Length: 314
Image (cartoon, rainbow, N blue to C red):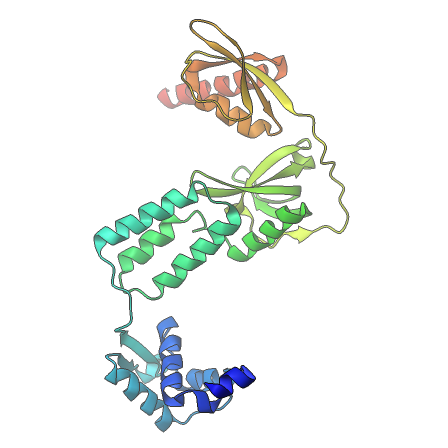
């Protein structure tokens, strides 16, 4: 201890190296089965060890772990003669009720969390899943995350791009077309409906704020050195009649007038797509009254939806 306090360094004199190497081996085998050569290189690359080990020394560490309750076997030669950890007494054991609670909490958190924290907590649960033996829990936690189909490396780039308000080019696999390159002035990442979206201004979408499903971005975004997209947008102002006076309004929606059977509200938004979805989600309790261009757009969407349903009956 005196040596550590004096030098602030870990040395051979400060630890049981048999115990340390045994725990290093356990940690390595918890990730996946390993061959002797992989283990040998792992010890050689370790910042505190920097030495190779013989097969006899490896058996000493395995015996030490087996005395603690581990079961380690060596696989068949055809499979690479890899050492496999079958029983780990330090693994987490979680009941079915605890599984349900963990998944419920995870899903609840993802409704209000931002993208950066979502990535951190997803990685935290991934780390936990490596320590547990319950395959149902591993699957449940993986499926509960909005990031289950998202490339985390791409997401990290998008988080930084939104933080800096970078202009980027993405390779986007649109459901209605093949992969296309889209320029976006990155604004924010939105978690909605157990999915994560990139929101930003795009010239391919008439310089309005559009949103893109991150799981459909198939390559690392390219950050442009010079910005060419104008970030100044005229907000979209839409008037609506709401025929349910108890319907909860959003922050960007304000009451203009109130009658006995309806509210007249005004929506201020820079995202036509999200506003359209919002109005359609209200169903028959909402009627757009202005501007006429947006009213015509809603009418066209509803007409097309009706034609699609009628076509199914034929």
